[in-house]
Amino acid sequence: MKLFKKSSRNISMILYLLFLILDCISNIAVINISYDLVWTNNSANTKMLMYILIVKAFLYVILFYLKRKNENLHGKFKNKIRREFIEAIFLTKNIDDSKHTGELTTDLWIGIEWMGVYYFEALPDLIFKLTLLICGTLYMLYVNYKLAFLFVATLAIIFLLEKIFDPLISKSSQSEGQINEEYSMMSMDALNGSETLKSLNGVDFYKSKLKNKSKLLKQASMGFVYLTTLSQLFKDVVLNIIKLLSLIILFRYMIIKKLDMNIVITNAFILFIIYNSISTLHGSFLKMAKAKVYKEKISTYIKCSENYRSLDKSDKIISDSDYIVFTEDLSYKYPQSKGRVLKNINLRIKEGHKLALIGSSGSGKSTIIKCLSGFLNNFQGEAFVFGLNIAETENLKKIKSKMCIILQKNHIFSNSVFENIRISKKNATEDEVIDALKKANIYDFISSLSDGIYTKIGEGGFELSGGQKSRIAIARAFLRNASIILLDEPTSSLDRENEFRIISNLKELFKGRTVIQTAHRLETIKDFDEISYMECGQIIHSGNHEELISISSEYREYFNRLGDDMAYEE
Image (cartoon, rainbow, N blue to C red):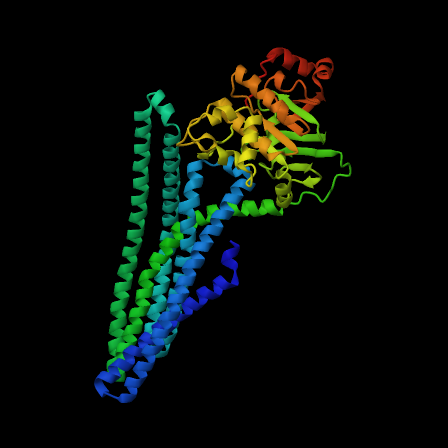
């Protein structure tokens, strides 16, 4: 958004519009002088015409330069908005959680294209045409007040029609955009879930759903076309009637005043410019109506990101530097939930301390990890890591440089193994990546692939198993060499055999580091310094396993019920 406000962009656009107006004025002068030259053969008019044509050539050079500059700014604007849009998703993870990938992809490409159209085509075009109309009306007021009155009446009728049709067109455009996003979502789901559809023999069923959605999209598009055509039809009827009246008034005025033909031709040309501007106003309004839908959505995303950057929940710096993680009355409520999923969480974690969070599904364990990771914002209370407030973006970047997060589902990018590992440390060498793979006990497997660490994996590449994906995530963590490791059920999707192997890798990773992990089974946390048992968004009891068994009836009941198979699905 800031790019649009930059003075260089505004000055360039204003100059471009100004020179367009000057070009229109020069065209009027050329017509006037050309008529005199034809009928009088005056050498002075010949010189004047040459001067004007030279000026016009100069104007075209300037207009070409300004147009190219505006196109360049247009491209930079869209790139900047895309960067801010992506940054908004990364900064405020809850946006990503609440939106489908298909919807976000549509907004990222189609929506931002329309946003560029709004600021660099529709809006400047509207300003230019309105400026011409105002100037033309003032001129005609000087020539004949009846013509000026007709222009004002025309504009009033046009704007009245816009007022009538604009809500309908905007609603139709919004409906078309919504169905288009739904169609994109369904298409992406079909691509991502093609194997599932085939395995369940659901291809024909899903194809019929896509076909029905395609029909709805066609109907919405045709509805938009119908409304815009009907709106244009009414405006064309009004314009043609008023054009005829204007010509009658002009020629009647010419006969009464006995005006020279060159003046009549000049005035007729001005009439043509004005009515042409009025007739093409509809196109500008349509572009703005269609672009407005996406503009408002994308502006909301970016505003959410800007609000997050400006958050400053507290200037407090914790006095006890022994606490590497510190929260005080940390509470959180998801937008779609009725109540708080976290209630007054107080953590005091020293460097090298290992904390496990356990509890039933929905107890809030993963939400704590998301808050400390910076994935969720707008929480209540305070949260500090390394003494830095995680609500502030600059602090969050510093914190994440010393933090590693391993989630339940670890995404594998469509790239080589080398690039997938190196994403955690962009300047890592080949030897460092190989060392990380060895520590994660996956190097032998990777080296057996056709291209070794340069084998393409992920979508379109070699498909890894669940255990192999977990080891890739652990290799990333080894390479990152972070001080704090946050884990959200890193082994929940693995079988017992693979899980035992991964646990040994994790134990090696945990050495000398601060760890916070949501628990899946007792084996993963029995050596932890502290276990916090959670219910309904609150920490009920804390201590090691033996202490909790003796002091907490809730923990005993939970432990006895689930035993060594403490399942989790938050």
